[in-house]
Length: 72
Image 1 (cartoon, helix red, strand yellow):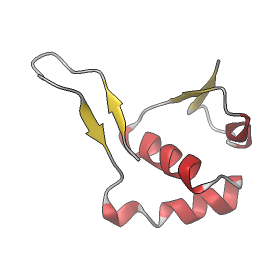
Image 2 (image 1 turned 180 degrees about the horizontal axis):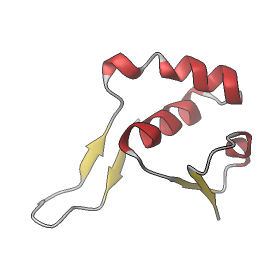
Image 3 (image 1 turned 30 degrees about the vertical axis):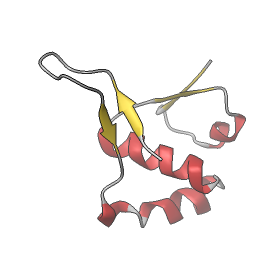
Image 4 (image 1 turned 90 degrees about the vertical axis):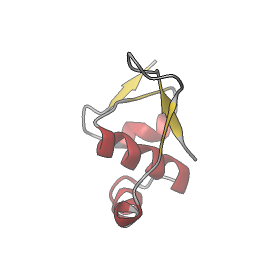
């Protein structure tokens, strides 16, 4: 699963974002701390790593207490 961002000035295409291999361990912590599914934990970890916010209607993210999730 990847996320993409809008191109920055000078970029020609969307930039796919993925979690670097060394950080896959953080998925276990997100799953245990927030009881998130693998997919949600992956999105959460990618957002944290790149300093992004998750914008969602997914109620599962209500378990995440940080300001990294914005609900529609």
